[in-house]
Length: 302
Image (cartoon, rainbow, N blue to C red; front, side, top):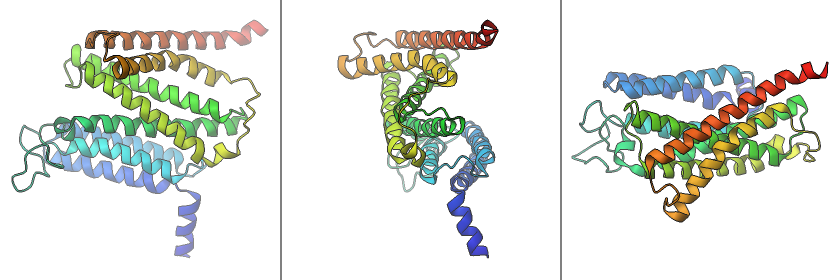
């Protein structure tokens, strides 16, 4: 009886295991960081635990039919972020994994409040890429399931583009957050042209990898109606219209860094921040206009 129930639990509701592990991992990291006085990452991990718990509550009954592998990918991306930062110390001293006279930067030996981010610049790029991959997978899975539930008949190409553009847009919006935190509020130490441009490149590559993976992996995507003959629903159109300005500036700035060594913006951090902020404002106006238009449409039809 017990074995049968376990088999049903594993096969019919694959969402539970990775999400439960995510909640437990974040709670353990929260307690560990609090015990060492690393309150910054204790707060981050507590927030991660709450997000994982919310996802667990939403997906507990398995009605969304989310495969386990994408969730494990999301868990791995989250742990790169949370565990990497937690390897630091509350002061400038060595982190908890500095053994036998190891210096910060050797293996998992870190120092400072930002852990691996402080000693390995590539760690930030890896986390950005992995998080963007996980985000694109999540959006791809979500749009496909909304399409099937609502009968939208979105083609795999539409799902891939919508998930990609939205994931890149979120990455650009996060860089605007870092820009404000660095230049105005001085609350974070991330910043600078090279840091931002390489983050954008990582976000673009990660989002592309995520939608490519889901395009071929998602069982629902394989069996979906591929004709795409129905008009796009307002939700998809609004999402695409709002995310395209951010995606476009992210692509332009990424290509400028990769191909022109930052010539378009003269490698100016203030200018790149202002351009991203401008695209965020444009996206907000486009979304507001779309909402207004959708709300007025029924009245005009009367």
